[in-house]
Image (cartoon, rainbow, N blue to C red; front, side, top):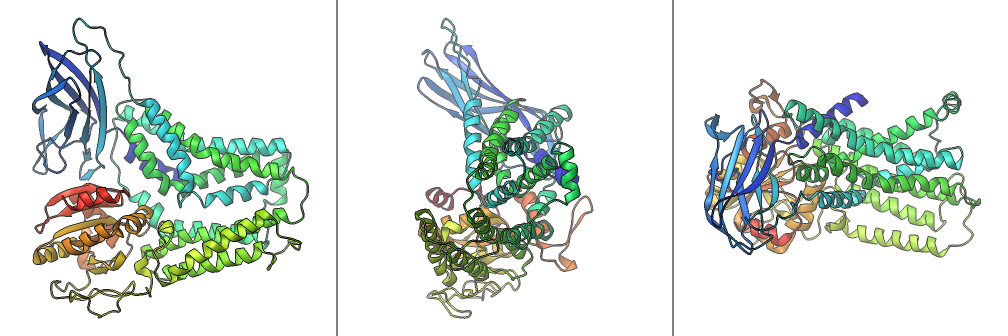
Length: 637
């Protein structure tokens, strides 16, 4: 099982991080004060890119015309034309030239960006950027120091992202698990510190070693394109999500005193005899669990950092990955050190047990995220938003009562008085409960949008119209997660495709239906490529879609089509899709995923496109970005 998971992880990383095009930039003199910028791309075998003439996915060159630099004419390109499915594409070597006129001043640099989207077969990667800054050697002047690159800025960015990952919904639940694991470790303080150090080292190795192997294999073999099906399975299938949920619940029960999670006595004896070999195995598997559970949140960030560094450099991706993993592992290594320090403190009654109980409540609350992902993906409707919130409210209310000493668990000692620190925790906890309560009547709770199920799964929202109740414009709106969107005067009835969306919006689940509706209403199509298990999608909906200037545009100017790429709903046989390789796609998510790859050339969520009434792409892709003003500009294109 572990070998299969590692293979899946390696495959996904290979897909996302293999260098598709190696770019180099140079500025060459042609005559007096006349120069030419030459950007050369070596395209990896089995890959192709689109030429600049392609309006939507064509390669683009942007040159910064700074002081002393004037652009002459427009960029030209040189390549041997190839053809794929009737389209002209570029394979092999790709050269883009831009004529320049320079003022002759000293220390001039020509900078800019090449943007391209590499494809292999029917699969196209997300658009990538190659930023360059080339010093110009003007005859008769001293040479300029060549700016070798942005390696240090990339390292700094990787370190910052590594620390920020601790706050993501996929990573933060591992904090109490880490503390509880090392609280249970026995042995000397030196052994505890050694295990904590190894825990951090294992995390670093699990992130860095696969990247090093992949970079080496890519450079040796030329790279390869693989599908994202395995990663999709790991992040959205019911089996791994239910497994992670059960793990968190088992830990919570252990924290409450139901049982102790310990190795069998004979295993412990053997481990001691082998100088702690068994302990290190446990530490390694805890690190592996952290890496696998957190990958759905860290993967996109890791990909962003690595894509910026994988521009023909062999060492840069490895160094930036090492920087990211060290920053990511450091807080967990410190948390692992902390319990060993706790054990050296004077005995303080049931204080240490209180820490475990608090962590137990936190485990219950955070473990629900995995069950919620499976519930939304398969439409079980056992953990809709109000149920999820009710469990959280009860959980944190009980935690507050526990901190006050009103309820006790096994091994607890009576609370004689309330310390200032404990009082601060009680105030924070009950303030959080008060914050949650309005959510039961439909408050958006934007700060928790990444954790909560979407608002449209809630059966009752205060102030929302009931099914069949007409709005001011004569259209009809939904009230609950399963309510159909009814036909209004300007909305054609397309049974089975109408869906309820956040903030009272309505739309379609089939692209062809949305295009037909847009043509009938004289509107544009807003394509929402999303997923039930997509945390960033929920944040975009809660923080960006809800902005009045965005919501008004979505309501008035667009027909929305939401394509869920992880929806496990089975399709009738008449709607199955057979790929060129003979694979039969039988559920909504796989069909949508194939559609998104073929038509929009993206494989991540969220991504947004704007189409006209005939289905032609007007703008996009636009990915995860919480800048409301920029999103408004995108909608107004």
